[in-house]
Length: 264
Image 1 (cartoon, rainbow, N blue to C red):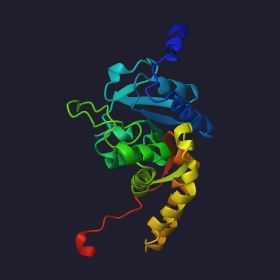
Image 2: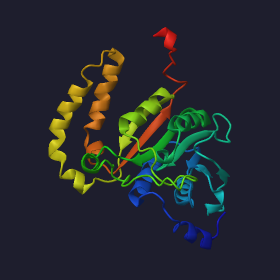
Image 3: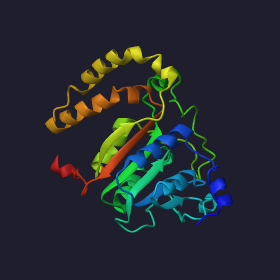
Image 4: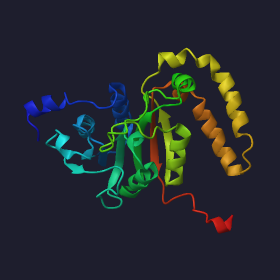
């Protein structure tokens, strides 16, 4: 058990994500009716891992640099999110990945690894910058760069990757999760951007263009999915939110079969 001095130090650990993102994720985990084994990645100094442990979860931290981790009462393993996790199948009830996926070279592999290490019914809580909010869309229109991806990626600093090399939209993240055995159960954000709120009058036009964009889909199952995608993408959460936060449950097995070219 940590001593009083350790506890005070852990409360002051550096939060690598935005403070509001950190608090929103803790609020989500506090609402879950059950507790269990939780993998927290990438862990940084351990600010989130420590708070999750206080909520009653049995936390294991993972990071590409475990020596940076400061919480002595929580184990921290070496874990490169671009590689196979050094973890057995079905070992965890929860995975938390806050502001991590946009840094990865192979996001699909990462999602598959999260699926593999979670038990059936386990939950993944993931956050990433919301590049589809209205302020970010306007910035992209004028500069070619999204919010929180403000300039060309540093080509001389490759390992470890600290830049947002793979910013991901809601519909791309949904595709990754839904084709690799997850189902999204909640989409939320941490704060509303005032600069995006000033553009909210564009929402009716965005909804109209979303309908026009998706209207040519011929597959009935995907048309049904598109209605839900359109509802989320035209919601205040996505149009105004700073950060995209999703909760996804592991279902039994992958839902999409790979089709060979000869079958088409």
